[in-house]
Image 1: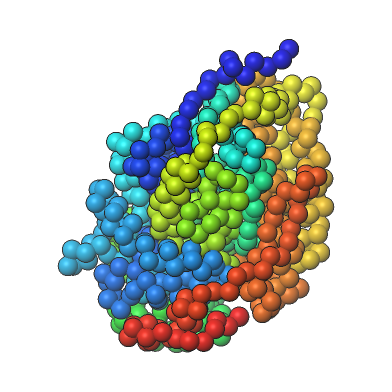
Image 2: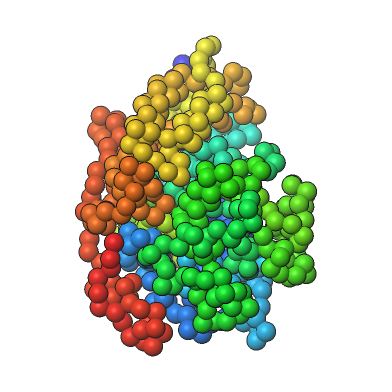
Length: 618
């Protein structure tokens, strides 16, 4: 019997935002504030977003704690942390606009920690030259979400919770809507709209040890890819150096970088503060070379260089991995993070309340008395959907992306704290971009009923099979493949093996089954998520195979050094006409001379208002 599309629930908006984290909420506020009929769909409940997991703070060069800080130094830190593979314009916009976005949050009711002078307090974080992270204890992401939600619900935004987007609908090349379904009832919903903003995060659930929860299955990346958008930089997957490692039930849960920013140090099983052995020559001039200098930094000496625990996340994660492999790890396969010997108990409880309760309740460890066991956990995607820097529009007209699912700002490695300011800066720009696009539309895009029918049949065939693959077992196999072949360190042979295994999983996934009806059917949810996970995982793996060098968060043991050629291209992934996944090296445009000068300048010159002139080195 033919499916009657006219009987499906249909909801109309000018713009539909997919994802209700910090980027999605800020984009929705920007749209609604410009008189657009705005809808937001969230896979989970409102407030259940990964933004909450960003605990340490949001990076913005406000100069509240150290007046020497300014946007140029923030831009420089971001470019150097990203190994100069960042999109120059995005890094510039971020550094310039972050302070205004933070102050805007304060105007909307965000309650930040304060300096003695009553200014928003800022803390140190890895890769940042000065204390730059505006924070609320170690619950900054939670406060960001609370503030945006409280402000957003008064702006006339329609929220559709526990709704999962399945496919983007198009009128020719233009976006015309989204097919989604309600997770509780399994009923399909058609959203008609003129523009879609994706803010769906990354795909960390492809790995077994991750700080990401069940929602992070690469949905936006896969939907954009299927709709014809280009993906970029997906070889750069960040393993946060400090996740919980014990007990197994909480393995991978994030331990905020704020612990190290507030003085915590890393030790191996011999009691050695080992990070001094891993100071890179590239960062040595700006990193503490002696224990004595690091101690002066802890005591508040603003002229002391920062300790090596605050190197970029890729360097710290690799150092921890090396210590564990050398047999100097903790009993459960990590290392020790010690703040108890560095700070008094009342300081720890006041500045790191979430971490104190997290370890007390989940691991029976009192971090005011004993060290934590930590190890790397898959945390963040630097790459994602390729967007225009100013508008955040993808290569598909009417499709925008912001936040973690969008590529460009972070280059080869993200600095801690840049994620939260990324959300609010580019969330707003995406909303502004959608408004400009809609204003210029000559006609309203039309929804094609045949597209909807085909998409529904692809989703429901999983329910109608008598025999087939178990999606949970396929997911477990996927995690094994990604952990073994696409982990912190990679080789050509391991990546080629992973590609072959992913091809096999794709074939097996075509016959996934989920017995029962669509109502309350977690197996069906898992099977639908597997489709996104497989697209995202293949894109990461093929991009990693193409980049034959080690840069930032991408480490190839068979190509251990940075290659000067690596600065000249981005790895682009797109869907070919025949349905295959294509990868290509696309030449990067040269950086604007004034930004190149800032990125390569000496700190002292930027503090004094001078600019360097040399081009960035590799």
